[in-house]
Length: 265
Image (tube, rainbow, N blue to C red; front, top):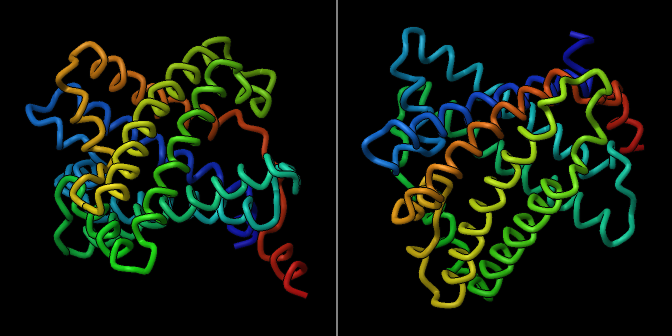
C-alpha cells in the first residue's frame, strides 16, 4: 500500500500503459486495412478480444489513470520544478491537459471492459466539441484548445530537435534512447498539429464534425503514403520511448498523499 502512494509508481505504471497504447496503435496503422482502426478505441477493442481481454483492459485503464494522476499532480504541485514564470505555467497547463486526456482514455478502456460499446473513430471527440460549441463563446474556446494543441506540437518538435527530453533520463540509458525519442516526439508533433488545426477549423466554422481525434488525424495522412508510414513508425517509436521513460526516467520519489495533505493545509 505504501508503494502505491509513491509518485514513482504512478509515473512508471502510466508510461508502461501509454507505451502499450501507442505501440498497438502504430501496429494497427501499419497493418490494418482501415487506417481509422488505428485509434485508442481501436486498441481497446483489440485488447478486449484477446484472451482475458477484460482483465487486460482494466490493467490498461489503471495504468492510464495513474499517468493522468501523475500529470495532474505535476501540474498542481510542480513536482518537476517548472516554476511559476510564464513558460513554466504553460508547461504545467499542458501537464494538466495531458492528465485529463489520459483520464478520459482510462474511462473509455474501463467502460469497454465492463461490456459497454466503444465509440467509433472521432465520435467521442466530436461529441465533446459539440457540447463546447453549445456554450457561450464555445467556438472561441474550441479554437483556443486548437491553438493549445498547435503550441503542444511546436513544443514536441522543439524537444525532438534539441533532445531536451534526455535531461530527465538516467545516464546509464543506452545510446539508442535519444534517436528513438527524437523520432517519436517528431511524429507526435505532426499528429498534434493535425488535431490542433482541426480544432481551430471547428471553432472557426462552428462545426464539431471538423474535429479529428488521434485515429482521424492519422487517417487524414493516408493520401501521402510516405508521410503516413513515417508518422506511424514514429508513433511506434514514441511507444518505445514511453517504455524507456518507465525504465530510465529519473523521478522524485515522494509520497503523493502526504504532499497533497500538506498542500491542503
